[in-house]
Each structure stands twice: as structure tokens, then as C-alpha cells.
Image (cartoon, rainbow, N blue to C red; front, side):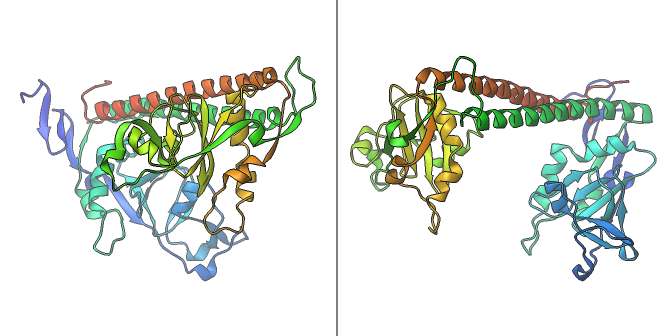
Length: 407
């Protein structure tokens, strides 16, 4: 491939001709943490003690371990770049907390020639993550960052601090947008959760509705159907035209409420030879084994395996309302399974399970509409967030290789 004018081919790839050819180790110093004896740990601060930062703290955002300050050998500031040394996943790039840090963390300190924020984004590249991950499996089976290989990784550097800062600032702005969308989504989810608690219990009534709610068994709201699995030793039972849902299809939705496809299908012959039943469009499929109460509304006719109990709502019941109502009953469903080593809820238990519902389908639909509108807004925000993350990844690839120059 012919090189574009003003560019050169290096170990790091094709980069601007004026960029400096270095390695990570030339520009970044790495310091591993230390591990005080656990006998010194305290779970709350007392005078003379220092917070101990552990990799699990970054995940939980809880920092509840303290050690004597005199035993601290390594210390990090909020602005320091920290690397999660062990995994999986390995090579987590972290910032934002100060304290002593343990052996599962490495502090990355950039030299004066490289802007700290630029170094931070360089270390966060997908290509570097992939490289480190491939090297991480040790003979002992423990994953971890290979510092020798990391130090040798090629790093082409813009020659001026001004260009490095401009790149870092552009990526920081992208991160700020992603963070603001993340926070907005979290807030909207909390609002929706509150609305569900109020609207689905009758605590809050929508305008125009005042009639008392009534207790109903689930069997009075829907026809409850089970699933089944054709014999796996009979090839003719599989890969037909009948969709066949498994719990994996539900978890793959990530909270999205409509199920439009399944990863596996069965044949009409397989359907006849098993206990699986056709679930008509706009019903609710619900997991009933191990993970109980994960729901989705099927937009096409389908069957499910035996790990489901499925609800075909009666004409006087709004499907979307019943979907939202069922999602709030997981704790109650699981409570019916207490004492079992393998959680499973049966059709008989579900049939007799009581819930409070509006007497009219009109009120059910009104409630479902409010919640559905919230879901639509959340879905739009999730799409924006995914797009923002995708754009940022593209920016990193372009800016950190010099394919796009800001100065």
C-alpha cells in the first residue's frame, strides 16, 4: 500500500512523519502496589489509618478498607492512572480515587514528554486491550498484565504538547457526553421504577380513574401455558419454521421488552412430539426456572422450552399492563420456591398467585401507556449512548494514529 504524503510506516502502524517513535516503557513508568497483612485491616477510618484501594472497590464504588499509614508503601492520587493488573478482564484503566493501593493495581506515571490525559487515552485503546489480553494467560491459569510486553508496546507520539492536549481534550469531551447520557439514563430508570411502584399498586391514580382495584388470580387474567423440548436425538425435530425460545433469548434482550426472534427453531413435527405449545403473538413469555420472572412480549408466534411459564392474556386484560405487573412480582414468585435447591415455579403456583388490578381494561391500558412511553424514551437514550460510544471509539482510532490531525 502506497504511503500518504507526510506519513511513515512504523511498528505502531502508519503515523504522521513528524511523530516520535517510542515505546510505552520510554514514556510511562509503572509501579505495582503492596499488600499489607489483612490482620491490620479496619472497615472504617480511624486516626493514623489510610484508605486501601483494591480492584474490587472500583467495581462496587465502595472503599471500606483502611490500613495503618505507617505500613503504606504505594499511594495514588485521584488524577493518577491506575491499571487493574489481574482479571478477568485484565488491564482495566482506572482513575478517580486516592489512597494506598494493593498488589492488584499498578500506577502508571507518564514522563514529562507525554501529556497525562493523552497517556490515559492511549492506554485505553481497544487494540492495546486486545494485545494485553492475549498475553495475560499464565501457566498457572491466573490472568494478569505482562509488564515487560506492555513496556515494549510501540507508542508513536505527537511531537508537541499542544497537539497531545488537543487530542486528549477532544476525547475528554466525548467522555463527558457519554457520562452525561449515562447519568440521565440512570435518572430516567429511577423515575420509571418509582412510577411502576406507584402506578402498578394503585398508590397513584391517573386522571379520570377512581374505581377500586380488585384482587385477581393470575389464572383469571391469562391462559398460562408451559413449554417443552423435542428430543435432541431426532434431527427432524429441529431447525424448522417454529421459533423456540430459551432463557438465553430473554437475557440477550437486556431489558428490552419485545422478543422478535429466537436463536433456535423447531419443526412442526418436533412441536407435535413435545409438550411445547404455540404462544400466540402479543403474549408474555416468562422464565420459571433458576432465573425466575424475566419477561418479554413476543411479537411473533413461538414456542418455549420447559424453563418458561407463558401468559396468553384474556380479552379484558391489557398485555402491556400485565407485562409490567409481572416484572414487579419476581420477589413474590421466588418466595413461592423457598426451600428448593433448584428454584422453579409451577403452573399451579402461578395460577393461584394473587395480584391487585384495575377493574377496567381502559385503566390498565392508560397505566401501560405511561410506562411504555418511559421505555421508549429510555430506548432512545440508550441508542444515543451506544452511538456516542461508537463515535468515541472511532475518534480514538483516528486521533491516536494521526489519521486526523487537530493542529
